[in-house]
Length: 543
Image (cartoon, rainbow, N blue to C red; front, top):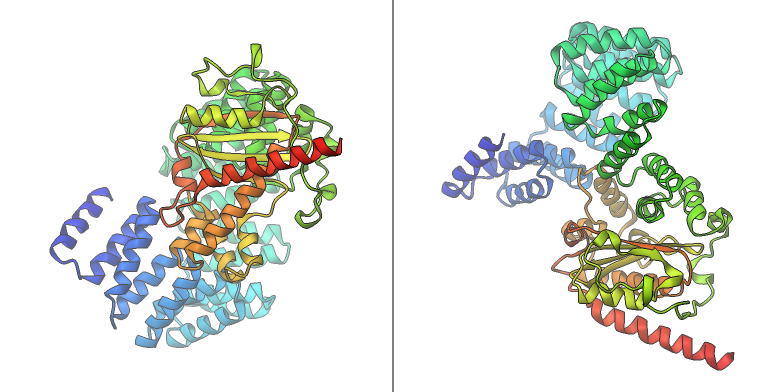
């Protein structure tokens, strides 16, 4: 695939206005996981598309693969206007509308596709799937029977049959449909893995194991297949074999194997190995609440509180309503009841935060002087002045995330070479909500951007996605981010107890910075310190 990309790039140097080449390059990048570059290539193809319907169709399919559904709908609509009899364009548009939750519109588009070519099982399956969403089960059956009459060897209709049985809470029927699909092609890993999952859910472990063994014969080095085999072996009580299988899956890059491997190692009493497996799972899925809970509990039990704060504080920022994470943090920084989400005040009603001086100065055993290891920058908030801590990080040009957890909440301060580059807490509204409340972004555009963000293999800032898609003006985004940062820092500065931990992370540069924002974080910090000084002065006068 990499050779194909290089070949296309060479061809484009010779023919830079060839829209089809740009489109082909974008689709190739999608397969390689180079999603940002793929989006740029597809955009270039559209600039050159003119009235070439195949380019509009290919670009629309590319946007669909990228999860950019509004753009896909627009491009595919143009493709259909240029070639009204294109079954592929109707099929892709129908799937796009499904993704947007516009099922009635999707049903209309699929119906047109069926009228254009009723022998294409894909469009009948797509229509049936949409009818299931509309609870029109009998009409869906008619379409599926017709699809299988036209092509008895088609797999897709059987998968939709499984969806129909699932909608009717008929587990046995769903499994039977999947078995029919798997019998048509035992090499189809998508079907085999789904069938094994359904069998496992019904406690039919031996049957699931047989399916996976057949699948494994065709995919001996596939991490997802081996992970499923390992889970099944564990359910059958073959624990040592399961450990070996899951270790092999993880070695092949199947990050989803680490968590079940940790469970098995813990059951064997191999706690140290289990914690290391959980660390690997957390590195792969840092926002996964279940993984964070398991690892956090293990770290707390071993009294590795600083490491636990890093894990739990990061996870809670993405899972604010997960009480398990709040309760575990409560074991470190204060009573779990302090994290009762129902008791947290809304931003508008929150009482003003008054800055308090640190209980002890930066000296003696709590001094940061002489520290060179980023992992050592952690401790008790009551021992440190957060202002001095940020100054230390600034002078030493550290890049990463400073996380703090107290009975008041959890906060993240992001730094690039010691400069403050972003901040948020669990008590403040998320960026997307702030933009929507200010009227700077359309709710449907925000929902689509969030869906795209969640679908990307690598974390991408929501603000950057909205900016690159032209959904928010740079000046408006800069204003909202500045307000969010200032509010979060002001809040964290008022915490006089709890724990903090700094985690070096060079990826912060990519996650928080965008050249169009040019956020003056230095000025924000000066404003925050001025506000805190004024608040402290007022508090002394009132005392």
